[in-house]
Length: 293
Ligand SMILES: C[S@@+](CC[C@H](N)C(=O)[O-])C[C@H]1O[C@@H](n2cnc3c(N)ncnc32)[C@H](O)[C@@H]1O
Image (cartoon, rainbow, N blue to C red; front, side, top):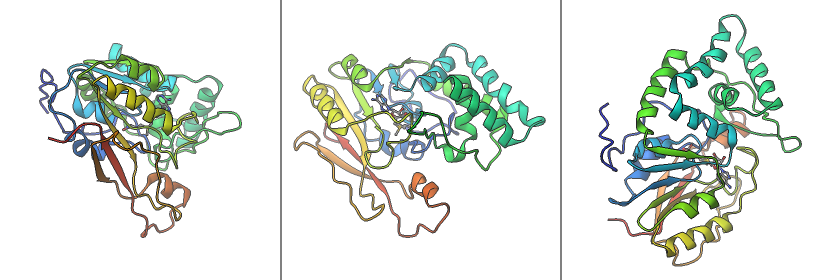
C-alpha cells in the first residue's frame, strides 16, 4: 500500500498485520477510532502505546509514542534505529523451532526474560504467548502467561511487518515514560489519544502497574485547559459478571461519548477457558474533549 505520510491524515487504514500480539489492542477498531480525530492537529501523542495500533494507523507526520513498560519501548526504539536488528531478535528465537518444540523455546525465552527483562525476549514472548496476554504474577512480577496454541509467525512474515511498520512510524519519537510525563510535552493544538489499562479487567496485565483513572482524568483536564485535544478509550457497557462499569467522569470534561463495538472480551475468553460466551457483549466508549466535525 502507498502511504502518503507527508500528510498528517494519510490513512485510516490499519497495517495489514500486527507487529506485536497484544491483548486489548485496537487494531480492529483503529479506523473507527481514528475517524473521530480532529482534521487538523500538531503532534499526535499516544502515551499508552502498547502494540501501537492507533499510532501505526494514523502514521503521523509528527508523533510521540510512549509507554511505561521498558521492554516494550526497547522494541519500538529498535524498530526505529535498527529494523534489521529487530528482525534478527525475532529470528534468533523463532528459528529454534527447527530443532526444539514450541513449549521448550517459549519456556526458555520466558525464563530468560524473567531473569532480566529485555526487549529481545519480550518481542518473541508477545508473538508466542497465549492470546497475546502479557500477564505478570503479583507475587514476584514474573511473566506467567502460558505458551500459545499456534506456531508463531514465520520470520519472513515478521520481516514484512517490520517493513510496513517502520515506514508508518518513521516520524514517531519513542520514549519510555509514565503518561503524566508525556502529557506535559503536549502543546496547544496537539492531539493525545489515550488507551489506558482497563479499569476493571486489566490491573494484572502489562507489568501490574498501579493505574488510577481519576489521576488520568485530572491530567486530561489540565491538558484540555492548555488547548490540547484528547480522545480517551475506556470500558463501555461491559457486562462481565453483573456490573455495568461506572466511571468517575467529571461533567463537562468531554464533549462527545461514542460507543465502539468491540465484541467479545479476549481476557474474559481466556479466563473462561473456552466456555460459551453468547451473553457477553462488550463495547468501548470513546470520549472526546472536542466536538466531532
Ligand atoms: C490497553 S494497553 C494499550 C493498547 C494499545 N492501544 C494497542 O492498541 O495495543 C495499555 C498500555 O498502557 C501502559 N501503561 C500502564 N500504565 C501506564 C502509565 N502509568 N503510563 C504509561 N503507560 C502505562 C501499559 O504498559 C500498556 O501497554
